[in-house]
Length: 387
Image (cartoon, rainbow, N blue to C red; front, side):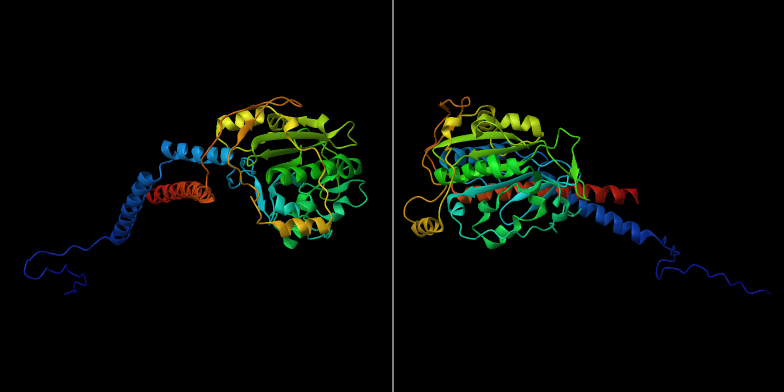
């Protein structure tokens, strides 16, 4: 008689019932279910603590802090940075931040703040032109400019970074260069840079954004990397710590400009229209609109900064005697038309501390970071359900 080789189900002891074999993937399903539950709990907590839109109370508090800083001379972190755009290549160096255009092999913009103390820096120029290793797609090189007839025009000038050996050296990265005619670079552009330094000394601190206009191509190109030769350059300044809060813009042709620098004064809004950039977007909308929509040229200091090494050493030795740069007890918003005076706005009487500015910055980063975490968790949940 043939032997039955089939195994019979075993009985559960004491019950007389037959034990059924568990499905092979039951443990996997249980693990996935547990993971989904954990993720769901985390999502609920995150949605409660960090809504997708920042709470209105938070937004109002943020605007109030920035408004206080503008009106009382407090420092606003990253006030100089334009609004970022999708695909921007943003690089931070010791003394400046830039957004790089791979298509044009030069920056869309270079932004920095300049203080009186920094203007009086003692480190000397080194002329160490070199490619920028921080640009992921590779920057232009010094060879691109060789024999082109164009200067390797600094966007943040080396003289504005004389407060640090490293910062000075980094001013010679090719990511900070744009092809400028010698007539512009060594003439009115250089004079404008000296005027910026003078205003940093006069007011204690200015925010600066500068760069080529890259919206009116096609362009002549130079070098193996095909560096675009811009037709115009811009510069915008914001003084938000002096007694009078003000902003001003400049657009200069990439040739020998005629007339005086004041002939090239425009509003910040006009520069935004030409470049497609959004400057000083961290300001509350009402203050931003007032500052950028008009310009009061008479409110600015038009002298060219100049100081000997001895004068710089004397200034630096005097620091600590009286207010430091950025200190102010009251401020007004300056508006008007080019060449006219006229101050409008409100005054502030309470100081906004740097601690408040730091807390504001950290809160902003926290909201943005947790928002990204929520997005990533949603992707995980979607993929889990798909399994």
